[in-house]
Figure 1: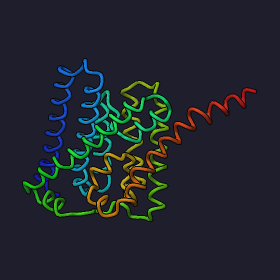
Figure 2 (figure 1 turned 90 degrees about the vertical axis):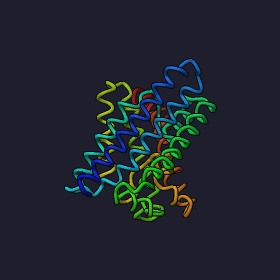
Figure 3 (figure 1 turned 45 degrees about the vertical axis):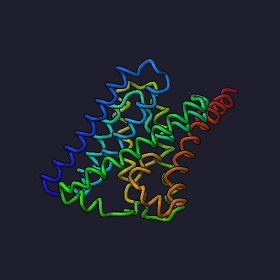
Figure 4 (figure 1 turned 180 degrees about the vertical axis):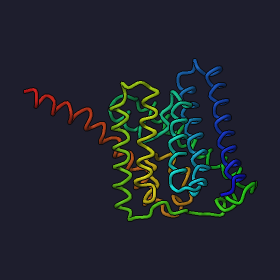
Length: 259
């Protein structure tokens, strides 16, 4: 990828971040007193930024030296999303975990999930519209692709990997709840980078149903049940297992050991 192409991709991501920041600032100014609409906009805009930037970030995966540059970009943008999107969850698996552990109501869970998937869909349309301009060859090539085939292993293996990645990520989130927010963002960004390094070539290491939907919409249309199982069901099971272990298994073991 030429230097000009790389600059264009980075400018697209910068413009996306600026657009999201503007929307969130307007929402904070005019909707902060509306208890349901304001969180909805936060979740929608957060999912939009993450999905749109990840679309563009995938085009930079082949920058030399490989995979060091790609992993560095994953870390930097993951940390940036963590700092720039406060107040939103941005992952339907995480929202489902909160609901299953009685930390969220049915209505809140439904609104969060709807906002996240809507933001993911808008990001897909938004980034495809930019690619249609054909500003750089990479955009034209990406637009011509149908299903890019993120699963490079069997469905069973992919299911287990996405479940495992989701479990590890959500376990880390719970473990780091009391950690300084800035430190927490960097640690989670580092963890996600490690997971992408270890499993990105097999499943993409996405463990976010909304992000998977936005990135691989054409794959969902072609092989709906396989992709639903791997990229929607597995991350949700992984997150719920963490809640079960954290709220039930660990306290039971502590009580047993204390006895």
